[in-house]
Amino acid sequence: MPELPFSRRAALRGLGAAGLLAALAGCGVPAAYVPESRREGQDRSAREQSVSFSNWPLYIDTDDEDENRRPTLDAFSEKTGIEVRYTEEINDNDEFFGKISPALMNHQETGHDLLVVSDWMAARFVHLGWTQKMDRSAQGNVAKYLDPQLRSPAFDEGRLHTVPWQSGITGIAYNRKALGREIKSVQDLWHPDLAGKVTLLSGLDESFSLLMQGNGVDVTRWTESDFHRMCDQVESMVKKRHIRRFTGNDYTSDLSKGDVLACQAYSGDVIQLQADNPDIEFVVPEEGAELWAESLLIPNLARHKANAEALVDFYYDPAVAAELAASVNYVCPVPAAREVLAASDDKETAELAENPLIFPDEEMRKRLVVSRDISSAERPSLAKRWNAIVGL
Image (cartoon, rainbow, N blue to C red; front, side, top):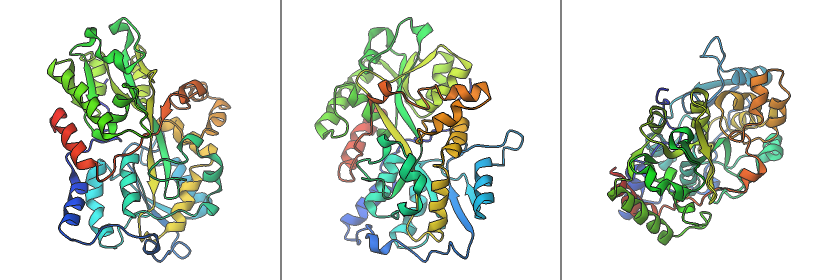
């Protein structure tokens, strides 16, 4: 099994653009925050039937015979007459933030109407006032079908400025046959029989929640002392060489080759790995796991806001959401799409409706939590501590 091409939950390397913003504020440069009243530009949607949509690579359905065609986007254009200028230009959250932040900071257009970033990055946009409030009166599907568990994250209460594109779970993947036992808990990762055979995610935002949950922390309201207690534990395991290394998405290659037996992992990746190796299992630990989302948002001064809102709502039609879920295999933010897949005449498609890594069952949902994000005030010191352990 080759290494999967990239991680949609890309690691935060250093302080990046967030550190730059903090430095500017400290030097007396006017605050980057934009109040709600100054975020909207002149909406040209009525006279310009187009929308610019930027996403990650390999994160949308494609035609079986022509990988350059995206059937759901084609269906949207046919239904509405709106042309979608779709680009796969987001390869790293921090890198993309650095690319468009100068325009947003200076109250200029970015050229983007709609984009997808990881939830922790969406939190940064919301806190800076760099994303517009969506008109939910024009988004009946979102209002009706959005997963209740994703409706009101701490960074965007009521989901006024963001909408999940796809969701996922950060849990534990392991090779049960090779290990010879079950893993049920985060604490199981520290068992002596896994010494040198464990990897953790290197990204601060990707890794901290699950590890704190393993210590019994309520991650909806974790504290800095909870964070440092977790870091002390991980640092101790590094010194003992219990942790083989810290990874990005390359953990998939380590697990497939047998170089590691257990690791922090994303649910969507494991579905792909299981297709080649059914001995690989994904666990939502007894202590809980993080439920996250990649968020759609409309940046300030977008030229085609109404068209962007229409595209967002289109993807919340259960039939469209089902088509997307069948292609990308992440947790679907539209639970009603499950019934659409279950009714499929295609056996493999219908089986997806029963996959708890796409549609978590009630028992699993009880252990899933949307974590509190790291505030801008906390980030510099927490990132410094974590990056020193990881070696970034």
